Image (cartoon, rainbow, N blue to C red; front, side, top):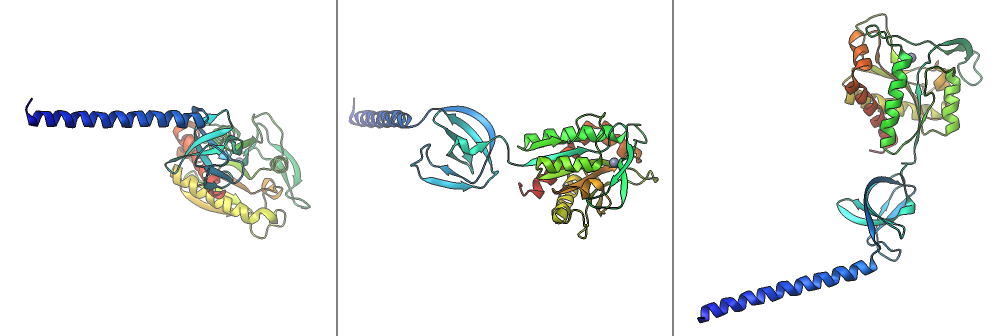
Length: 316
Ligand SMILES: [Zn+2]
């Protein structure tokens, strides 16, 4: 072995020694860390904070607090320990939070009313608390001019789709009706949403016109002067605007603007922010077919309404 080769051999041995030393140090560190660290079962879950809560650097109460999260904040859980900690991935870093601070639910309840029912109820009820003016308890609704499908079937289909979409976003959902054969007046629908303590009451309808060329979506809101539901009129206007703009954004439907009226019993009796979504015109053959026959379009309508609710509740 000449001097040059001897030198090379020594260098190689040195490098190997350093690598081994590093490996041993790493392993010792791992074992040491594992001893103090509760075991985490790997999971992949979306959860929400029940109230404002801290993310910690390590899964122990004495660890430094890193980030304070607001109520209803969405978090990605990557692991759960039996010691009561969840490992979360947030802003590209791993943190820990007490599992008890998290919930499957985002803290909001949405009441969904599928407009109409199998048979309308022409007997009358006051249009609002203390109102002299009366209107039919439930009107019979429109019918698809091309498909022949009645509005009450489309509205329930969409209510169920919207429910699914909202549940996947962490919402709790109350369906005012889950079948066609019911007899629930518009004022009672509002009272059910009130009693449930809904954060949002969304009423799903489809429109109709004598002109088959008329198309597009609109939402209905109480006016600023509404005397029956003054407390929620401002919030209902903002809900109506948010839902309509997101609905039209996702579906591409023509935006017909928010319609303001104080003649809707299901709005006037409401004590929670409320909007009526008129998704499109059943009197327009093209819109009728899209709404009733295209599952893709139905999914877009549900997504658009859910985006609007998210926006209203400032969850985006
Ligand atoms: Zn209707």
